[in-house]
Length: 483
Image 1 (cartoon, rainbow, N blue to C red):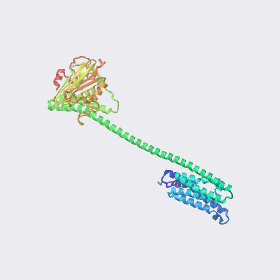
Image 2: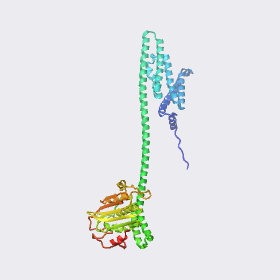
Image 3: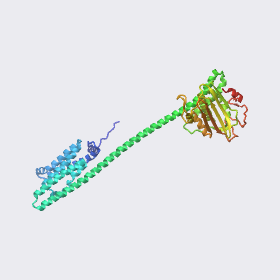
Image 4: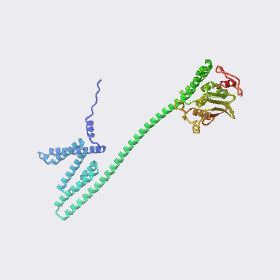
């Protein structure tokens, strides 16, 4: 298949050649196009005048009589060649000088008085000098005008035959000089105003370009900031998930190592591992639904019973040097909350307590009745916190632990859970004096409902019940299991 490339027409090539004037300045380029048009008109006029004169003459005398026209045409052609070769200012200067020379020749030959009807056309060199070359050229041209007027007046005085003609010649000189001076002044002011307007326009263009550059830079910076915030959010999310998974894995690891350390059988630890894995699966589902609004699985359940169910998750988190006690003897305190979030909150507090007692100590978690609320009291004998640290204990991402051991979101998660369920949380601690945390959750008004893992009644002392394939231990048995 042969592709045919269309060639531009002669008119398009001619227009492209005319517009392609080699000048550096944009302002000079516009003026160069104007000067080029004037020179082309002058060349064409001189050529047509010469051809017409030769056609009307019967011999070669027509050419000799129009020698000045040929010179003007040749001069204009030379200026056009200079312009097309990139010498704009030289071409414009020679054009103005050529006009002044023609005026001088006319004034010398015929005098100032004879030029009164042509003075409007004699203003063209002054106008062209201002248009093409600027303010300085205007005043140089005005000075040349003064010399031309003086030359014309000299001719009038030489031809004068009386005092009246002398007075008239001097009056013509004064009037013409004033006209040219006023015109030069007005032209100078107009050029100055135009230059100032052009300068302000260029400054405005530069300011707009700078503003656009700054806007683009700010947009790029904003995009980088968004990207940074996205990465920071992802990092915080990952550390939060890692924190919760570490708590769950600590439970599983505690159960797995209990086979060797305490001699427990595999059948005894499998339910605890299974329950910890189930909590991990719940956490994974919430991670997968991170981009969607989280819908809590709110239910009504007995607080003490719920803690009994997570006993196999909490106790293995503490090493053998820590005596951990979970007192759930007060029953019948039914709350309405998200059970999984409660478990994660308890695991976070237990994990912090374990980290605060590396050399051993005591940890107590108890359930109490507090009017219209159920209270959770948690105490440890760990290193405690200073007042400055205690004031920021619920602040997200604040931690005093090493980078690889803490994320600063555990207690923030607990605080959020309590507040979103209409409860209260207080913390008290002192250096080397341990930490005491108290959580109050409102009792459910739907006492006739049965929550997840709960009983149908509200008895204060619960009978043993079978759940999840194993018997729930009695308070005495639970006390023996605490360590």
